[in-house]
Image 1 (cartoon, protein in one colour):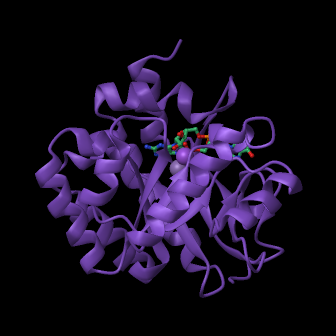
Image 2 (image 1 turned 180 degrees about the vertical axis):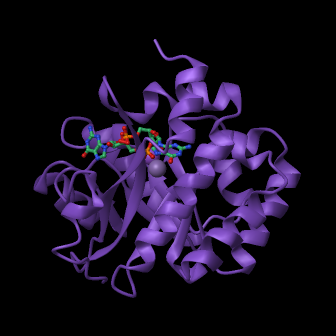
Length: 250
Ligand code: G
Ligand code: G
Ligand code: MN
Ligand code: NA
């Protein structure tokens, strides 16, 4: 099992990498950008997925340093992509408690030269449960400089609908559990179509996550989903493997 000391050393030694998973515009099929997903390149254990160290990083507060590294690296990488490819970065609720987060994000943008319009920040609704008012103000601040906000893992938490209307999201990412159930559970179609209707009313776009088959893709297209992400469209990969075939925005 992971120890705090191991994680601290790993951060000091920069033993992390970002893999990027594309998301596409459903109507045109064009790539619009990539979500950055962190991995720990452990010297003896190989590549460790985030669910095995993010919780510890959050408990110990190390997520603040790790999250800053992720933001900086993602902005640097994206700054070298074709000019309309976007990058989406996941932020932990723990990072949201840091007063310096806004400055950290501005520094990552400023130092990389990435225009704020090309950065999307993904947060889960757990961020909104605590400190709702402070976080609302913070989100407005991010939006005021052009950053887009996405509500991640939508449908997995509580009271989702009230959060949708109360917070200034640009995009809703429907959790992959709804997409995997699409073919054998009629309810999933109904849920996705209600989310699309609601999102339109709120002037937000909708991303379907975990799209694995072309049948799912076609159904999502029929339901009016705007963006799709999943193994069908591309697995998370190191940037070196994206670079030879540059992303083309839609
Ligand atoms: O590929 P996947 O195993 O990459 O990601 C698993 C989970 O880890 C997802 O819920 C994702 O949001 C989270 N995650 C991936 N990268 C980051 C990151 O840089 N920061 C935070 N806070 N979470 C991340
Ligand atoms: O940030 P988020 O919670 O959305 O992280 C996405 C997670 O989903 C990552 O662990 C990623 O590797 C995983 N993932 C991405 N595409 C697919 C897919 O098509 N199917 C499945 N089962 N998982 C996926
Ligand atoms: Mn995400
Ligand atoms: Na998600």
